[in-house]
Amino acid sequence: IQMQQTGKIERQKVNTRNILFIVSGAFSGLDEIIGRRLNKGTMGFRSQADPAHLNADQLLSHVRAEDLIGYGFESEFIGRLPVIAVLHDLGPEDLLEILRNPKSSVILSKKRDFRAYGIEVEFADEALALFAERAHAEHIGARGLVSAIEKVLLNYEKKLPSVGVERFAVGADTVLDPAAGLERLLQDTSLSRFLDNFQREHDIALEITPEASAQIEALASTRNIAPGELCEEMFSDYGHGLKLAGLGQFCIDADVVADPQEALNALVKYYYNQRR
Image (tube, rainbow, N blue to C red):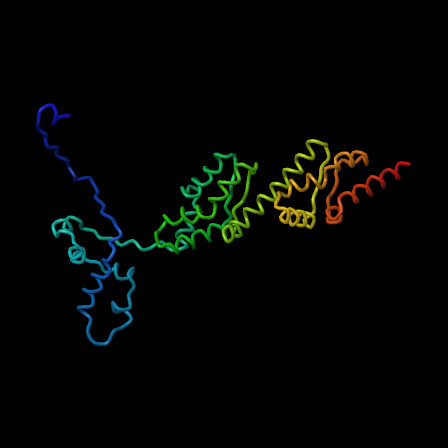
């Protein structure tokens, strides 16, 4: 604005007495410059402390002003940076601590993403450890945490909002095989929805044994339909039949799944004979 009004710009003076300037960066290739300098002073037998045995992280701990000048900085600029500090790579344990922190923006952000769909998500410590290991393998520091979590939960975020899931936990099995974990969750949700709808419609509480649940899921898979949809077909007469038997709750076991109609007929007949 001043330039437009007067055609001149008045220079502003800034007192830098109480300003801390921090210059940071990855400085790729700086370790090679340090290594060449250290090698100049190496003669004769090479020990384990010799530059040839040092990795890039160890070489950086020997950085001096002349190395930064050799890297391309002006000597006058380097002279105004009196303190040089080296930050080492974050290890898996460091990354895990970031995730464990109750205020971790990585975890809180992902929880907010799911909460926007009405879904609460919890992370097991074993899952966090696996995320930390995968992020460390990327060699991009804490930024790798977001990528590691996103790769596992992306499909969960796409599919779960449409199936009525309200809560789920991310465990080690979820991280190791996200697709299988999602499939199990969808199947469990489908069965839970069937049980809830059945109780709401008929006022009868159903329970499915683990063996029966496995059978239902296997049958549903062969027909390429959801387990809950299969249950609606298999147990379509059970609302009326269980009411005839005077039952307020019923357990579906493997025998019932094997022949639902025969099991229902036998049940109604048994209770009918009991009343005679």
